[in-house]
Image (tube, rainbow, N blue to C red):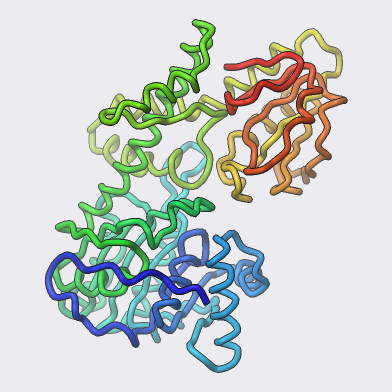
Amino acid sequence: MDRSPSPAPVVAGDATLETAAATVAVVGMGYVGLPTAIALADAGHPIVALDTSAARLQSIRDGDVELLDAEHRALGAHLEAHGSGGRRFMLTDRPQDVATADVVIVCVPTPVDERRRPDLRPLRGACERIVAHARAGQTIVLTSTTSVGTTRSLVVEPLRRRGLVAGTDVFVAFAPERIDPGVRAHAQQETPRVVGGVTNECFLRAAAVLRHTCSAVHSVSSPEAAELCKLMENTFRATNIALSFEFAEAARHYGLDPIEAIDAARTKPYGFLAHYPSAGVGGHCIGVDPHYLLEPLRAEGLHMPVVTAALDQVAKRPDRFTQRVLRLVEAIEAPRVLVVGACYKPGVADLRESAALEIIRDLDRAGVHVDDHDPLAESFELEERLWMSVPASARDYDVAVLCMSHPGQDLDWLDEAPILLDATYRTRLGRQRELI
């Protein structure tokens, strides 16, 4: 079995807390929770892996999950050892099983609703179950990206009402995840982790376990500081991606290649961090998390105009491509459009918040015949309809929209497209290439 690197040092206080035998419950077996559980099992911790979806748990048993290759091998070994009576890696959908754990780590989704407002229902439900089954001596760590103050309002205060005081009876911290799905260079064990405890003892207990999941542990003064840190990271990304969208359109105005200009700018060794244009911001973080910063501040009368404008650009980006397609086909009777790349990210079979799905949906609503091609998304449901990936051919379409390509994917067949709208800005395919 592949072993994790040496555990990260705890950078404040006494790092010699004995945690090797601690049972860890990881709540939520998604793209964060499952790799976290594997890393902690690699370090020798018995694991209670909780998810309320029986289908997700079966997918884990079957190995049908998105993981790095080393994580896949480790997961198989842990499940096999558990089945043989060895070190425990127990998959469960029973919330009461968290009561058996010494440490509980919460890794559930924090999405937004159709109006881009934070939807805390998954996190609130998970915290209610954890609080209901909490016992004295437990360490509870939230990792889900959320608004400032959530750890205190959903965990610390409900525990207090149960008679369990954080820092004395139980130990509570916030440690935001920093997982970049599918990117080997950004494996979580190679990335520092920020931890904010309610008290220093809370920090120490959380860090003593989390050090097995990262390259270093960085202490901040409170859960609120750690919550703000994560919101700052992803708001920074969203704002700079929105800026790259505007520069792409400026480059097109001048007849220049935006990628060439960005690559030239990134040669500067300070003061510039490259972000590249695309069809939009997909996934579970960049286009979502900043709303957990903006919405509470807006409700309290504090406005952030720069961030608000950036998120407006992000939200409207897919429609820019939809409208360009509609203009390109407006003179064609019964036009046919092919969208290439339904997933939100290269190399990852994840459709959440995908810009391509917005483009497909809106073209379909406009009455255009639209198909999709993505080798990692053979089928998906959209608008109460099952969409199937079509073969790699642009021969029968009037326009092809290249939203994203996977590593090693052959795209030469797109050269037969009469018009290619290139949202990657990196190909020279199609008989006529169009950019936004």
